[in-house]
Length: 484
Image 1: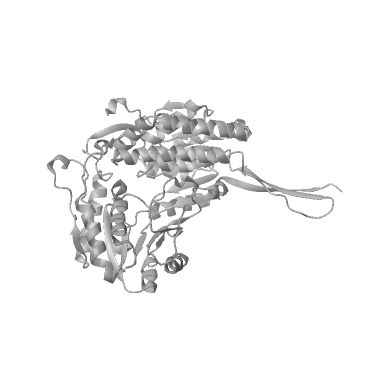
Image 2: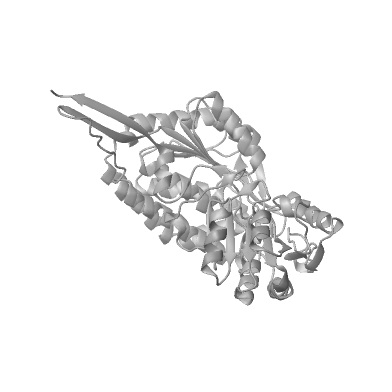
């Protein structure tokens, strides 16, 4: 994929445009470290223009578009995503580094989000409230206005669609700011939306650095709602910026999700699954089950199964469809390796991986070996902090109560996996863990557009996916009529 064929201009008001400053920045191909695309370096001026276009489109067109028409348009977007799935997947695989099959799954998920919320667009119902004779009271859900979508680099296509589809379905317009590391699929998605017939200005994309363009968008007085997915420190900054304008925020932040394996579980399945899921997108997934909590008497067997999967992994560039691709950047690679070194200093034992990939064919890319660290004590750095890489830690427990305490012992609460054949134990643990999602005897969920998603504690608040997401993009108006 040649950089000459990749258009890095922004999309504002239905037009591809350069940054007001005329400046650009380069993104790198994580598989080889070479320049990939030249991207417009937007700033506050570009955010102003995008918000103005979104506001005009909201006031004059989109908020007045009949729900059934929105249904038809969003279904067209879904159809175009599926039609261009191969091209979108190749773009995402190259930009992020993930294996092509994972990028294809992201494209399908993006289509499903638009399809799901197309089906919801004409079903954003209100209620009637009985007040007595000669009185009528009812509620309606109305769109908020201009919604900001600040999108991370690990799943840009999938997560852009996850927030933008319900926002548009409810009658809002959007200004999206993708992370500077991976912007290409969000721009392409906006082009497909135009091709599907969305009016100009309904879906805008501003590119640029997070501390400049992202900060300008989060603090813009013309924004009516913000959805942010990313790190806890940046999420806090976004929330503070939103507070100045009294703007609601949906935050999906970090995770340090536990996968709890009891000795009565299918240990081969649990251990192999733990390794495979943590290595998806090279571990750069907020929901990744990075902590494997194993009942002590099952430790050796589970570790053997997980380590076997990791040692067999084939690394390579995403377009070659390997078992695992590179991480996003050199700084991310060094950060991950630093965590591994810290884990060893604090008593952990590396059972698999632990280093930068040694294959000479991969030396220019940002490849980290799939890594398993056993004997990790609760409360240590690698057990507490989000590594965001292909690193799985193993911690043992003796009792169900101890497992619950360890699972709840981090600042995060996004997902918890539970592996056991004992239904009473499974449901007891599910009731006690502090997590937004609990997955029993199977960590991955296919077709998840309809499943509510979000975190407890420092993993954020608000819910995306499912019908619960409608609440984030609407406001309730109550109407009372005295007709006596």
